[in-house]
Image (cartoon, rainbow, N blue to C red; front, side, top):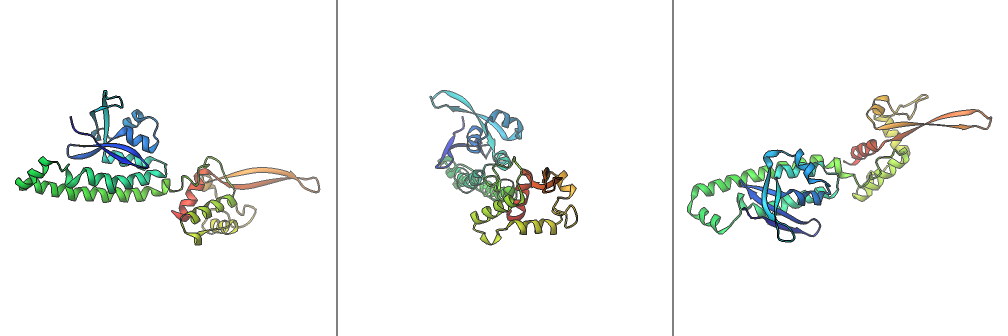
Length: 259
C-alpha cells in the first residue's frame, strides 16, 4: 500500500496526496471539498481515466476504505472549471507549496531514495530529468490558470448574474471591481459606458435605435430588450424600449474592461 501524505492549510483544510507511478496524485474527495463540488462520483466520470487510481486508506473511525486519487492534470481540470474565487488561490498553493514538497526532484526523498542517488548515477540523472519535466509542466499549468482567470475572476462581482441590469448598474459594477483591484483610474460612468458601447459597435449610434444593441449581440446573449409603455400628458399610449445587459453580458463586459 502506498503512503498517503497529508497537507494542512488554514484556508483549504487537509488534502491527501501520494506518488503513483512517479507522479503526484490528490484525493478526489478533498479537492471536491475545497472547490465545493457536491458529487465526487459524478466528477470522476468526467475525468481522464488514466489519471484516476484507487488506494487503500482509513476513514475517521480507523476503518479501511478506498480513496480515489486523481492526477495533477485532472486536478487542474477541476480548478479551471470551478467558478469559486478561491480556486486560483488553491492552485497557487498546490504549485508553490504542495508539489515541491511531495515531489522533491521527482520523488519522495526517503532514506532509500537518497541512498540510491548516491550509488546509482543513472537514477540521479532520471531524477534530474523528472525535475526538468516537472518545472515545464508547472509552467504550463500556471500559464493555463492565467488564461482561464477571466472565467472566474469576477464571479463574486456578478454573483447575481442570472438577472439583467441597466447600463448604469453595469458601470457601477465595473467601477467597484476597478476600486477593489486598486485600478481606480479605470472607473467608468453610465454616459461614458454608453459612448464606449456605441464607438465599439455594440450599440446603434444614431436614429430611432440609438443606444439599442445590434442584433448579433442580442443573439449572442449579451443584451436583451425590455418593452414598456406609459400614458403621456395628452393621454396617448407611448411604447418604450430599454436596453438591459444580461448576466452573461455583465461578465463579458467586466472582463472586457478589467480582465
